Length: 220
Image 1 (cartoon, rainbow, N blue to C red):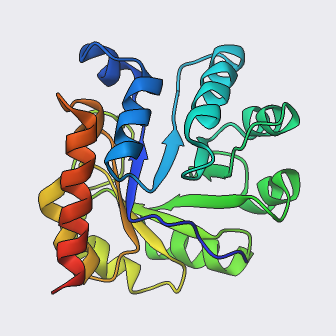
Image 2: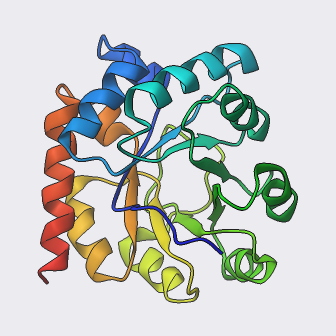
């Protein structure tokens, strides 16, 4: 198992939200990294492989030497980006994607592998497989960006779930800056945000506020 990346302020992209603010994903990511985001996951649930690969290449070229760039779901896109020399760092999977142990064999031992988990059994399986570096636990609260999300756990529920595994855990689902101090104090390794940055008027300023909120949790 590899050491997990810095998950503390973890941006998960949403193209529609970015465009609703008059920006593309690349501009949003670049500003957010300047503001303090520590990890970027590129998510494009409805995109074809070619356009998604282009987006991954563009983002990795822009920020891949500063923060880990993680590809959501698409092991094939990750492998294609690596084959083209892009500095992509890993893959994040959901429970209905490729099995984690299969994905690990495909992406190699040097890539990060994250897995979403919403129940104690899913957390236990993630640990026992030995393929994952970290887990995403959620959802904290209901969110429009993931229509098939499991039942909301709240900040306290996510913290209780994180205590069940020794894998680094990042909270996911409807997370806002106000949640970050309590999440960090509750033992989470980080917080994944979508709307808090993608819908922000100024994604760099929003990322900086999230960074400050996370740091506040470390002082509790």
